[in-house]
Length: 273
Length: 173
Image 1 (cartoon, each protein chain N blue to C red):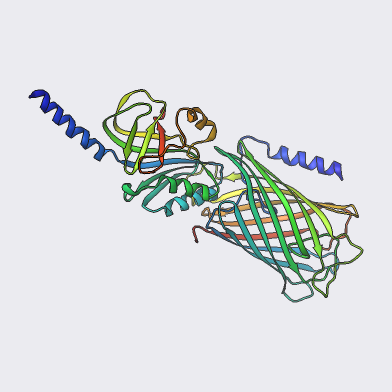
Image 2: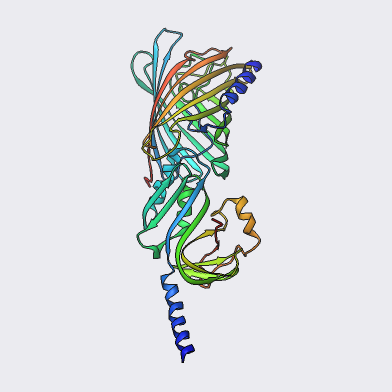
């Protein structure tokens, strides 16, 4: 487990360690330490297509999200969780995510940012897996830190968070034989492929991204590690299309749908307030 | 008589100077970003600052050239705030103004529009034509560059009317 992690982290760093690239930190599966601009609103729809191992079905999950740059340091997300699990498409919960920038040091084409974040999610779906996932399956909260370094046109980001799961409402109790606390961690990186030179805001940007995400269940000492490559298009410097695939590299815990395709559309509205 | 005429014309010239020495435009570079989405966020925020007539962007160098509908009402602080509210910093900000035989030296002050500019680190000279003034105050210049000037002025200085004094120097190129 540790060897896989070290190998992959080193590999991910090497892949992106070319000084000729321009790094991007609009990561697909994780959040960077950077915030959204103040007075800006982002609208996001994340679509997950995941083959479910238990019932041989294709799970479809939709996460609509509104993001708001409250001020230059604080941003707030509100999201809803929808799924077609059990046959019909229905809402299973909602959540909020807050990120506060604690530290930032800017230079020309470089910066270091440190942010604290928290998530609170409510979910009423049945619990079929050991993995704690506050964006799809569990009620609970998360508290964490994320650091992002952009240096000589390369960016790398790392996060760690504590996750606590609770009962999914009175009808779907959290199984007493499962760990309800976990540490999540991630390493992310990305680079701009096109355009080579910026001329105007109408140029379509093409980025490739790589996220490495893991979870460690406290008490039972079980882990998983996922790798998630993605491509990203940014149109008009305002609308974003992400297409990514999450692949389980390692797991010794029970997960119902560890692999899957994610397609996300995001649009920014500048200076709304 | 001749000297009196000279004195009068000098006086007219001198008083004319202050009226004609006006800020024409502002150019700034933002730091802490690479992507065009970030650049556009700053562009949009600068466009929203009151009395900004146009913003010309250089995405590659993350710099912006700003022109005003009424140069008399420019707020340099609001321009800086637009950049920081977008989540980034000002790497440098230059004010372009037209001069005509304006005498300046280190520790001399000059009133342009509603601003008091205090010159640092320059030799005694006369400014002519369009010249750029580099603001060397905190949050208007990268910290490592600002430190070169930091010892040469009182950072808390304010004008007679309590207005902010901008410390400026003449950029090398």
